[in-house]
Picture 1 (cartoon, rainbow, N blue to C red):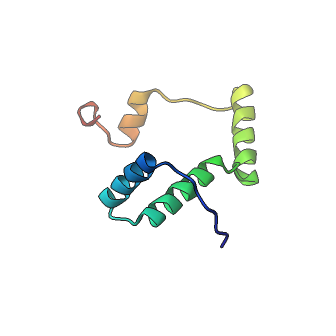
Picture 2 (picture 1 turned 90 degrees about the vertical axis):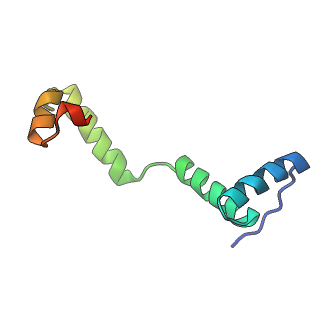
Length: 84
């Protein structure tokens, strides 16, 4: 683990402490969770995911993907219009 120091103003700390308490977390745990979740969003997609998306886009560009009307998808999956 690497330790880093944060410099935040009192109002920011109070806001973060309030939210941490609301989530039944310590301020430290709340901040760690925020940072980890943000890092996950910033992380580039895996090579496997990129390859899958490239393949999907290529098939789309070459008209090799068939689309179904929403009514057909609902019927196939036993979904009625009233449940949507």
